[in-house]
Image (cartoon, rainbow, N blue to C red; front, side, top):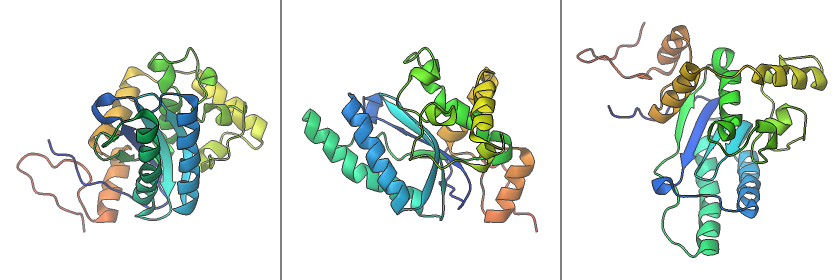
Length: 230
């Protein structure tokens, strides 16, 4: 089934994934991770994209972001590639593309899926076996949300602020929330949405979104044309 055209809605959270070409490494040492985060920080500021959560893994990366307009996310990702790919190629004596095609993204229903998606992203290193716990992995936003280390890259989302009235309350609530592991079904739902470019949310959210943007946002049922409710 063909992937739908990318859907970007300003001021709404989007889950983004970018993989290395042929699943090759895109980060090989601490300098690579720091360099990428530096360019991400600059690009997010330049193109007005709020970064709510992230994780950088050896072969791929995840972001949870809210662009302020329809073009900022694409401009941010292009700008990062323009700087990071030449840096990586020169450092490791290689040439050509580093990424596996275009980045993929899924529009998120913040009320229902923002916090699960944040946890999905930050616990990726644990599920992949790169770390025994999220707090020990240095290249994610978990330390910021758990109150272990402030991260200037992060713009806290309203869903995170709703966890408590003070930083301590929010951090404690987030830690308690992450102690409840996502179910395999939740992980599969989040993963499929971003890989296929589907919006992630309730049926009501998807219907309202489709009518709002006046375009198809989910695969049409076989033999039935797409129609927007009047």
